[in-house]
Amino acid sequence: MIPIFQLERPKHTEHQRLGDIVSGVFTPVLAKHSKSFWLIDCVSVGVERMQRNFEPMREQADAWQRSELMDVTAKVVIYEALVEGRLEAPKHLARTVHDLYFEPKYEEFRPRTIWSLANAFTSAFKELDPIPQFKSSARLGEFLEARFSRSF
Image (cartoon, helix red, strand yellow):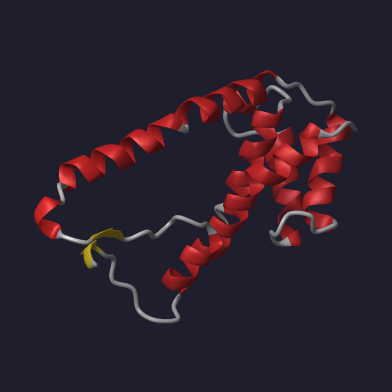
């Protein structure tokens, strides 16, 4: 097989571990015979696959924007995530997430919803270095989905 597209990565760096965090981050395109390989067709298929995921993500965002939270629920989720360590993120961000949720910087995040809570987490993660920020952000959606799929 001939690698058609390959990203250069130094060995044993943060870039290499990025592929270990989220499967599919780096997937080379291989073709047995490059003569019959059409890059435009390959890219078209890749774009179409990504677009299939847009609608479910938009539906999730809409649902989170409609899902009101009681203040105590938001506090419990922040506590579970950061103090109890159920979300891999630094504990010292608990106060920042709390402040960003209960005193948001932007009007659109004033409603007490799962969407606003997710925004508070992701805004707090911006204080982190890039790799820890990516790791924490990547795990946030899964944590919130699991947390809000069960009863309080």
